[in-house]
Image 1: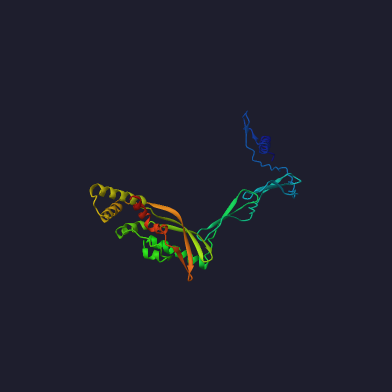
Image 2: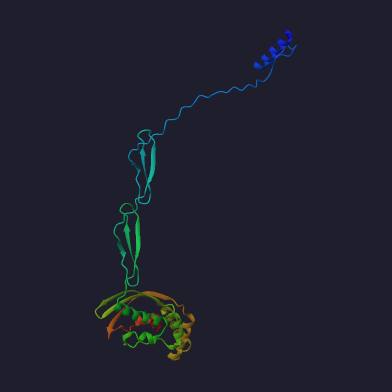
Length: 298
């Protein structure tokens, strides 16, 4: 049985729509766009592989900034093929020290010092030099002076006298009535042995000593006492004047001090070091010019 021509045409149009994606409804004059669901695969053009990296051919290292003693420098090199530049730090070279030079010689009682300089820069380095060790004889001589000064600080007259070889002259110490005041002042004594020199059986020990200075206090007290008794009690005994003088001194003392360099002359007798002679100068470490001040007012 033959199909009608209309049926055949309808089938042909449907097939055409499936292929082109455009359909016309029966009786329509405008065309409707039907999405095309057909997927088309495309192939991108292939990218050629990059050229392989070359091996750098480096020049020799060249210093561009010289290193210093404590500061790094810098050097660089260049690839001869691509021109690439590479840099790196050059280590600081460190100081090159000269010989040590003594600035201050050490003694038995004080450290010394030495200095050295860098050959390339202005840097300096210092070090302390240890005190010189005592020989046996130096230690014995030093000990007798230390003993005397220690006794003076305690106002121990008996112990002070034991340090002398020659007890003459017989020097007079201040009255016992003023000892308590002098003893208080003696606690302010400070000393430091600075040097020892020898010449056979003789020795000189040099010390820096700070001790009481009663000169002005004693002088002023004695002047006031004399003036008082001259005006009001001219027939007073010397003992009465002395008592009043000491009373004024003890009341008005200021405990001033003075510092001086004292040289102790020592002699060696029977294997022992002793201070050669008792002198007023050495006594005044303890009594602080008390006698001289009082006498100056008379």
